[in-house]
Image (cartoon, rainbow, N blue to C red; front, side, top):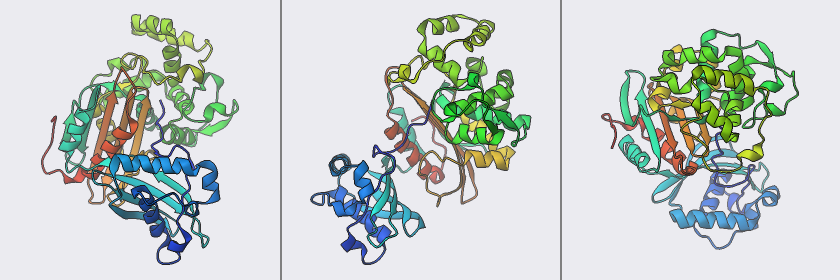
Length: 428
């Protein structure tokens, strides 16, 4: 129920830097990026002068060497280093081009004369594709089940699809429906609500650690729910708007068959049902009224612990989850686009999900979701050419966990070719 981090390097503050002899001339940031590419391509050894001491404390040279060797083994040498954008002379985004893929890179260097790296992030490899038809074909080759749709909202043109009406588990993307109900009810964004123990869930997010009775505005909870996928924020907001109100909303925002989402579950309820097989069996055997009664009783039971969810094996993802098709999710994003509420738009834009090029899109709204066996990525996009798009894909595999890096790479490729469509492309 959290969107797993899309990083190749397995630490958070990644710091890389360049040989001081190479940055004395020209553009230090560009030179640093090229030096990193040279190391990936096989320049002998890893020279410690490339890295700030703070980086080497977190990432030993051996780990850097292993990472570069792995990238080189999988993709070969870096053929080109392309600067995509920069925030300052010390921070920017690049693309490392390999023969079969491109890797997005974020780089930060010291302002000091040494220009040693103090931040480095590698995104998932983006396979080279020329059309959404190729994206559909790549998604179709994944094990398990996939639902995919690319929709141009301006005229409703279906640009590409793969099982677009297949309802699958979507993880935390369900929070889009809570946000939609907040907007429809018109609850003041500055309304203050207080954290309650009974609505504190498990991670993702941090609000479950905050003291009881902490005052938070509805806006703050909504931002946390969407940008950080905070489960505690989601459960507080679901309680505020009302479960049955969200259920009533589902068909109005385009969900074709809401029956699988009634009752509309909170995150702590999902955790409790997934942690207890007997309870889960009782819930699944009951009708809707019986399920509602069981959920009322759950609030008095002990909360599960994170240790109960350490396994990466999928748990009942085809039975206990939130379900929607890619077409359903494109339609709810279309509702957000049509409403054009500046606050809602800004909330959706805090976390773009992947490092999508700002050169192509003037607005990127996003929500994703994941748990073992489940991945979803859903965007509302506005191109610099003036067109509006909804893009959504879900991958489920009840037998084993799914490959986040591979899926993310395919979806990044989808955003790259979104405006290259000449005619609609459907199931390959």
